[in-house]
Length: 147
Length: 147
Image (cartoon, rainbow over the protein chains, first blue to last red):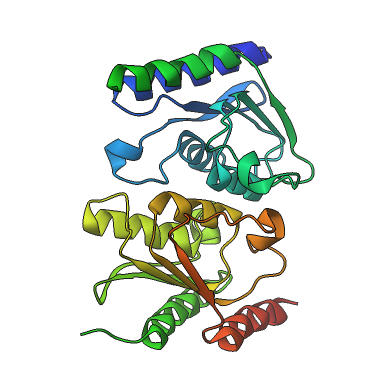
């Protein structure tokens, strides 16, 4: 059964909420191939005391483990926030087929650094805007509650 | 005792050779703080079946674990090859004080994508060229042997 992009972004949002419950900036991601979620992750920077433990990195490594493959050309990652430079570089190496992110991140998104040059693999399709408001509101609420 | 940059880059080269012996592209890194190596790593992309398992990512995570801190402002990373986009993004998040890399990487180095915009933290000092020839030759020999 092929479920919709909306379904999978809701799964990414669920991961984001898990992060928030753990005191982490609420960002979540799922990697999907052939209608199956093959990797999930949420931000765990504080929990793991590791500034590289972003949702995408964790979801990607889970996907590689699931498949026993270090490339995932036929997969899509759904992530609630625009990937940072590190995560866009990781997605490049993975040769992932499609990146769907929710909200843009003007401060830490990859575009701030890479400008007009795409950091992704030439064959990777990039889309954004799905549940953007919901994705961003989670992050805004998180920081508002801490002020 | 404070040892020289040359000493630590030789340690990074040692890590790179370990990678080569394991059938990995020979790239190595060490993270140093107050004269102590607090993290080491070599490329393990094939071994771990994970395209994000670069020398720098492994050395950084080791350093965070050693210190119990996710920022390493007072540390230097020595890496044999110019970091890729992913690793430069990871180094950004770490707020590392200094990045010393050996050889430039025209194909996969961060500069190809980031152009004139530095992907690193504004306070991070970047140097390169230390044992550049030796660092690059290791990689060249690796690929020559596989052709």
